[in-house]
Length: 348
Image 1 (tube, rainbow, N blue to C red):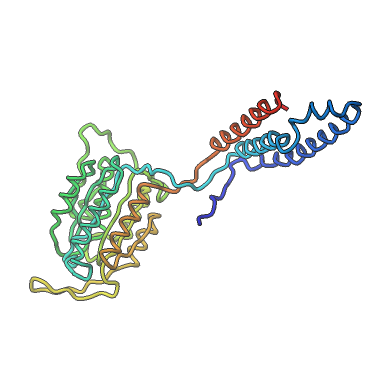
Image 2: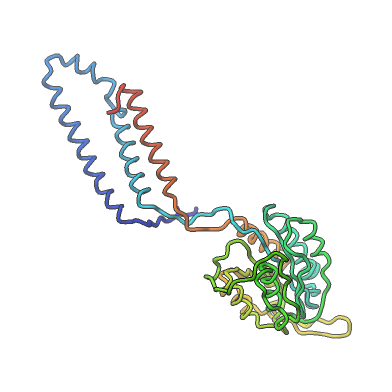
């Protein structure tokens, strides 16, 4: 069972007001004691019992108890409490950066790594909220944006189905081109690091201001999900590319697929040794304040993408809940007043 969310307070000094509540309880007990003393002065005790008979028992104490709870709740609300809650994500764009190097034809993940990755990616896309745009970047020796961000799931699926295996693994190029796809007006120069031209600017876009780095992981409108089965063999340094993403606040979730120990794959008259570079993938995720996932089988890969789908749809955020507590306090206060009027004809 999950523990209750821990509360923090923006104005914790106001919590000292809770010390007034025991004084109010003592005042209530004193008033009850004083009332008993007053009633013994009446000669006709039967008349007294008839007058206060309806207020006897637990009903007499319930409205004051609810009023006390209302005051306590309102004091908590005034201290501006915050809690870590799972809320609908504000992410609007996801870039799938997928490895299409020759090693993806290995069949240690059935039916092979590429097909398993394609099927898992398509299931992931189908589970995303419809308001999320999806773009696709493929990378091997170079990187290419095969589908710009779109709401059309059919176009994204068609782009994934068109993957063609190539030689080389340029993990860093995949990250950099994903960033350029997310920020087409930023003028990210791809010519020196990926062998491609910079992304074109929109015709009516104003000149890009000087770039100012932001807090890693702070850009909540987009994320990159990168899947690969090998270590980088060409292109820019993946960790430098990850730092570029971190400076823009973009999280890069990394998924490693295939054999950790490495194996030799032969096809079309040549062979290659492939080994998953988990340390680099973990570092990329850590630098960008994201997560790394390992998928050793097709089922593992499906579960990874299901987990990512949940992370994309929901995000845990520190959220102020003063309004909720204030509403609860008002409800308790109205309940106390309503019960008092219903049972005793007065608010007392």
